[in-house]
Image (cartoon, rainbow, N blue to C red):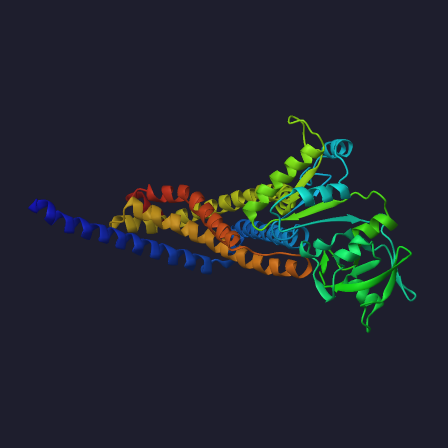
Length: 431
């Protein structure tokens, strides 16, 4: 027991010495690699060019895809908090064949379906319906015209569900909806065009040749992919049905109080609609239930192929860069054969020589990764000015880790050759 207790401090001291020696060797190898990069700037640049290009490409593409994902999430897939939409089609379908099958099979969602769900569905926070007027009508006011604006027939609850919010005035009321009143809620493009210096509330504009009294204006939404989202007018759905389409196809939006409840409401809406349409349990739905994640899923399928191609390109550049680094390290081993012989004759072990050259290779590749990250950040900033890009921290970490790993991997063979050199033969080489 006494011998065992005495040996434990010795073992701990030996472990500390090994860690200290390892740290010293690693630190020396790091500064040797830095000095080599500084001493041979052109050679270092050409050596690391493949790694720089690969790292830059990877981070820029990830940044663009990430920026587009955020853009789609905020501007396209933003259906509202805990909102899903009952529509004629399933938006997740990406094949032409499935679209054709759904056009033949699926029934148009009608106002009676909305009224049925409003009465039969329980526990929802809000429910509303909307339809688009096609072809898109023109809007006119005192000689000014906006051609082919977006006109939607809405139920009053849609102001609590959709992206549009009231800036001035109000949204149309239940009474106006019930009596098919010719009132409208307009976007900022119509305000800027028709009422640049006057109050638009209670003014009468023409939409599709019909007079509508403005009851409210919307908070500006901006544009999506360069297309303005503020060139619209919303009118009561009953009014749209009376003036523009007797049996309009529509979509129904349901808002839940929470995310888990939204899943329950989706299942309940599916069961109610299948029962209403008398669909046998083995048959497919003749309608689509869509949420924000449906749009994001379709989008991510599209960007997934872009990312796969990028990974292929990055892999090629990384392999080329790694091979170049390996060749340079082999040349470095040849140049420093005498130095290796001296170090071995002074007691350096194979492990020390191996560690030195592996770390040098990793530091070289890591330096290329850092240069690629800096270049990628600059390019992403430029792309964000003209399109959209957002650099995630994970992309920077992956880029640096990947480049360093390539250097470590392709540095193993040159380091192994250096470690296996016979010290006597190494000392004779330069002599």
